Figure 1: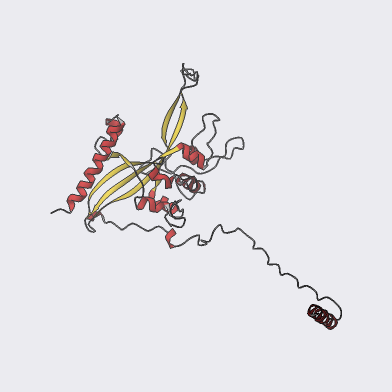
Figure 2 (figure 1 turned 60 degrees about the vertical axis):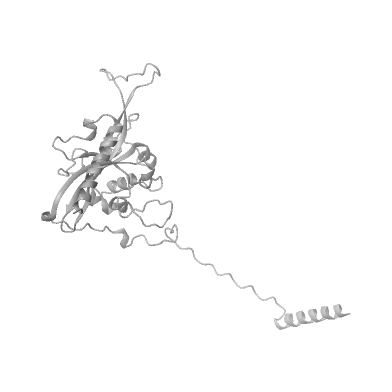
Length: 308
């Protein structure tokens, strides 16, 4: 009986509501549609594309009369070294960063022979001949020519990782007696490209290997050109490195060089004969030992400055 009583109350309440609404069902409210935002999307939650950290921090000024000692050093950074992996990451590659700046006309490339930056930079003007490859002198010097197709190599991270294994650095170590500091100042950087050249005879025919019957080839290390470091810093400071520990570390390529976050070997020091280490030492192990000896001489010189 109680169950029938409650059912009767329910039907009575429903009939009352139906009568009050005029016997019609109330219309459903329309769902508000939010318009989609137009334009490029932000890939992540860090929206600041440029900040104060993206500007170059200038070196401390050094007066000529305060420089008591200088030593010019050439060193090479092996991009295959695990310690230098942040420079050659497939995600953010320093060679790709440099080439994009060259292609956009934001950076000058000097000839491989113009290590002192005294001549005119290589032309960035593209050719007008529709039948020729639309490339500039910068493209030819930096990318090199594919021996198989006789065309300029394509600029992509795969090519840069395979063909550029070394960065050559020219720097001055300066003793500033006013500030009491012995520090390096990078002058220029030169990417070194690996080129494969097929051996030919006097008639221009390929020389075949008798065991494999394949053309013999020589591996050449070619300096793509020299980049003035003060100009290059304006490009490097705007590109963050790929960091395994923190995606928002804030470290850029300029930090890698100015804070010396790389591994390298000395290949030459200023000398009267202008010899490189490889010019008077042929054994690779002996060259490494000579590089360490030069490092120790400089370290001992700095340490001796503060001993009394």
